[in-house]
Length: 288
Image (cartoon, rainbow, N blue to C red):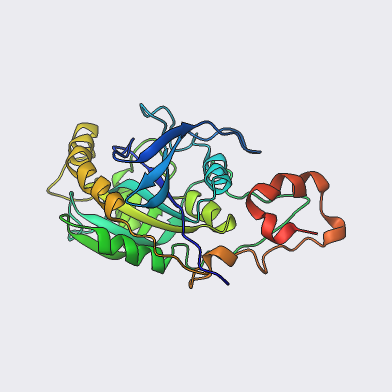
């Protein structure tokens, strides 16, 4: 198999609404079988690497964590040929040594969301995709190599909560007891959907606060979160600028083949409408 040049999709969370320096940049309007994404997508090249940037909450922060069009966002990036997604997210810390201002690279999730559609598949076309290892080690290594400045923690577990309110003290203590390292509102189902779409996914978490468990810090304050995000946004943009994308034939982690044995519905029992809809993200395994 001939090597191909990956195309990197950046999903910018709170505090990261644009990427400067893209050559031949164009804002593209897209529609998908799951509706429109959060915003237009900025496409271009950065240091010779093809990129597509999507503001997760929309420019101006108009979408709540629960109302985000997660499926449309991933499907839109897939339609642009994105092979690797770097998600940049604001999170709270559930550990003393994960301080505000630090970065964390996520490798695991505990999904506590309940009001979101979490799969592209459904009745008429059923698939069970493994998310035992929801992030891509290869891409995470590339992100780690690009981080300069903030302290970086590898191998973090992200507790995804529904929101939009922050945690109660009892919840924050419970999540610490479970062994979660950081807490946020947008990590799921984004990571699961990227896996279903066979796109490598990595999450760079910007730590903004200590949630509400820490006895020496008060409850989460939006002004505090914004101040920390503003301080770290430049470092996050620098990671994007330095992110390398060497050519490869296939992802050694298998991210681009996640659906190979996942579809359960027999070909003659598949809903034609679902087959047509899912061509956008799963066409590789649904070809006749």
